[in-house]
Structures are given as C-alpha cells and as structure tokens.
Image (cartoon, rainbow, N blue to C red; front, side, top):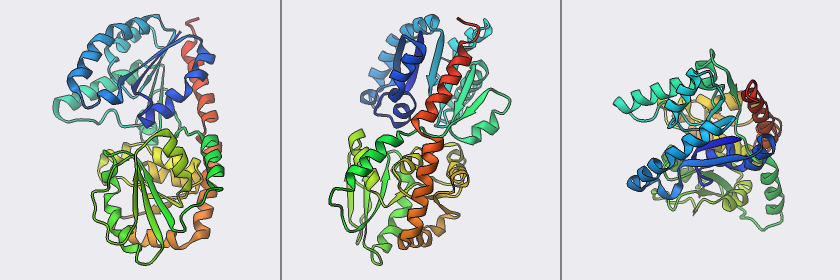
Length: 346
C-alpha cells in the first residue's frame, strides 16, 4: 500500500502537478493507495476549522503511515516526528518531495521548529525530491534527486492547437498566471508595461486574480479567475509570459512553476536572472534574463519588439519541456524512487 500526503488539494498548483495528476499512475505502480491533503483550499482561511480537521485526521494518517509499504510526502512537515521515529527503528520508506522552500517559512521560534522538522525529515527519508537546485547543493550529503516541474506538455499543446483556430486579439498578449499571494512579485512590472503600451499594441492578461490594484493609463488589462480549464485555455495564447521574484534570499530557494507552464505551452518567458530562473535559462537556452531590477523596461521593450527572438525562445522552451519536465519524465523518476523505497520491505 502507498500512503500519499500532500500539503494542498487539486486547487494548489504545486500539489496538483506533483501529486494529484499522478494518482492513477501511482496506483498502477504501487497498488492500493490512501491519499489526503493537509490544507484544503476551502479551509485555508479558517484556522479554527483547519485545526479541528488536523486533530481528527492525524490518527488516520498515523494508521495509514504504519500500514503503508511506501509513504510519499509532498511539501508538508507535519508528520516529521512519526517519520523520524520510524527511521530510528530502521524503516526508511519515505519519499519527501518539495518545490517551495518549506524550511524557510515563518520567523522566531516557529522558524526554528520548522528548521528542526525539515532537518529530521531529510535525514529520515529514503529519498528527497527537490525542484530548485539550491537544495540539491545544500543537501548534497543526502539521497537527493532533482526534477523541474513537471508539466502536462501534451495537454498544453493540444490546447495551443485548438486556440490557433479561434479568433484572437491582434494585440501582443503579455500574460501571467498565479494567485493573489504571488501577484506582488510582478507588481513592479506594471509601470514599465503601461509605458510600453504607448509604443506597442500590447495587452496584459492576469490569471488567478480579480484585479491588479494598479491604475493603468494605457495598457488594456484582463483578469481571469484561476481554474484548470482557464489556465490550459488561456496560457497557450500568451505571446510572452512574465516571471519575477523579489530580491530576498528566500527567492533564491523558490520553485518556478510558472516558467515550466510557459515552456510547456510554447510561450517565451522573461524572468530575473537569479535563483531558479537563471538555472532554467542556463540549462534550457530559453528565456529572456533580466540582470537587474532597473533593466526590466529595456528588456521588455527588446523582446516585445522581436517576434523572431520570441519564436526561438518558445521553440527551445518547448523542446526542453518535452525532454526534461514532462509528466512522462517525472513519472519515470517517481517509479525509480518508489522502487528504491520499497527495497527490503517486500
């Protein structure tokens, strides 16, 4: 039996891409499975109800953990005492998978507890699967595998083919997909984009937010609520994808889900030349790097004005997505890690 515990439900992109979309595959590989999430989207803002749910669920998770041959933990530290105790008894059968910096959330005593839990999880897991190479370097003495994404390249390309037959805007479409909590990362780009709207026929599409919070003077803006249907339908219609993070050390540890979505959809992207964004650009040859925050206006102007360069970046990005970050590639790695975690248990 396989027990899967993810931080979020299907509405959380990192959980959907790395866990929920692969349940049928995991069941085929490992047989019966139990799966659950720690923070359902509907309860994320209701701390009291969420706490009650956790109290009621923990005994069930402990039971599933005890009965499972392999345990797949995605982006949560909540079971670290149980996992550490099992490891002390000689049972290392946990795959710990994360893309967000789960060791760097909070401050003060809460952060210290998280750091302890993270360290114990890493020590106790049979395998650790990371997205950002920062952690591959940091945890070099552990059994760490690195995998970007993954993304459903086939589904994005099918949507791209379908969108080609629809009448689209004549404006160059600059786009972004995310959530209200991550909109702040691209807010510094709004003024440069608004200024460029005086030079170019462009528009901005924001997926996952109800508004931008910025008073655009010239740039047409469309905000769309996030859903899988909206994302797969709209992202392939972008002519340029935006990705940006702030200049904090925490950003050096973050994943780059948006970049991988753009690549799978055949969309050229522009991003800060730091952290995982720089790693992806270096490895794929795709993407427009922005070395300094003050360079965004000129780098945006350059790539917006060059259709051929956008085409080349999109082509290289899609090739990389198919070869390195597709569901097929991810599932092959996952199958290998599951097999290794099962060794000596059967």
